[in-house]
Length: 98
Image (cartoon, rainbow, N blue to C red; front, side, top):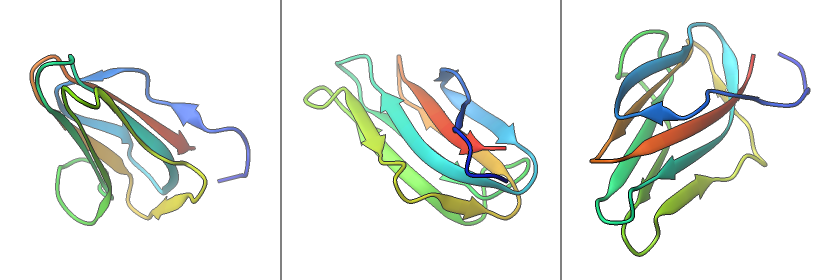
């Protein structure tokens, strides 16, 4: 893990996605709603499942359709990064260091 530029998961649709299955650093999180329904993204320190320590969580809704977790303070993920995105028309982008 270096101090290089963060990588992007790309836009993740609703569901559970393992972004990286080894030690990494979470650099940021953006969650996007469809402007009508709420959207939630929860990031776990886990290499394959939606359980364990929550590293970050963000909620977007009709009044705030995009929410960000600032990447100025990187968070260590000892096991990996798995994200759960929920909500109709929702998406999320995870920024991390490989």
